[in-house]
Amino acid sequence: QVQLVESGGGLVQAGESLRLSCATSGSIFSFAIKSMAWYRQAPGKQRELVAATTRGGNTNYADSVQGRFTISRDNAKNTVFLQMNSLKPEDTAVYYCNMKRYSGNDYWGQGTQVTVSS
Image 1 (cartoon, rainbow, N blue to C red):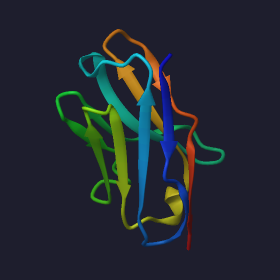
Image 2 (image 1 turned 90 degrees about the vertical axis):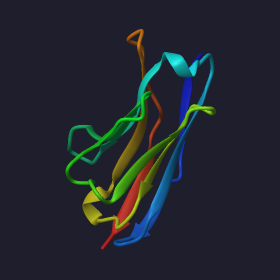
Image 3 (image 1 turned 180 degrees about the vertical axis):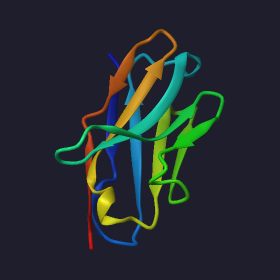
């Protein structure tokens, strides 16, 4: 059974940085993974894509985090990271790791809370 476990969230002040990690376990083969991504959901808002990376190394970011956040991936360990710099109060949300396979399977982690105080 595939599992995704996020870590690295916490409470920081505006302008500070955090690094989120998403570790995977289970029957995962790197060649079967289409993309890995980070989403976030703030209270009262819909879940939104923050950043994504494909198996080929392409990345895309939400406009609101472009230039501040960086997504990276360790293909050997099927782990994905999100480096978040210059954090703003509006970045406060629960951050979720997502993995999509070419087969169409879609997996989610349980989420990690990021709170940015002003």
